Image: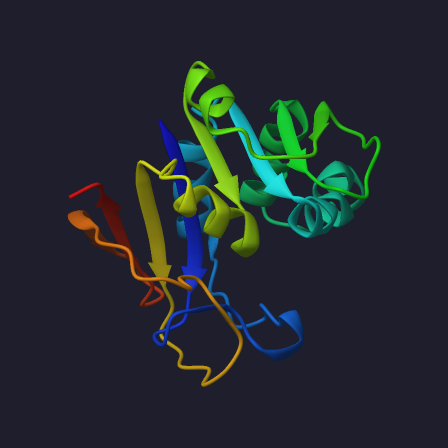
Length: 177
């Protein structure tokens, strides 16, 4: 199964102008929820920019003893998880990561286990190839008015479950209709 998850604004953006994500509401409760789901994945799949963002923090959690335990837990999950990054510019990268150039749907469908795909542009490509089986949206209680939209083309989905968190974030889990 290929899963994508994203924190989104009420008006459907994953980033504000200038790639701003400071409005994402992630407390310990939500981070522990993320960790429980992500630890069960077989691999993380990202685009280059998302992968480089992850490289800025998660290999270095040991340098931040002030960070909450769930962030350290995610750092361990991220470091140990096999990763695939799609990039036309990177030749190599670190932390158990394979660089691939092109999305080849038949190869991806043959991968065993569950995969988590991230990065707005890459997720769009996976949607175009009908590779996404489940969408986990984390609706944040904020409207941005502008930014990077999660969906760029119409996509029919069927609601599977909802869950509200103490911060006002609501998880909406969708599958294929």
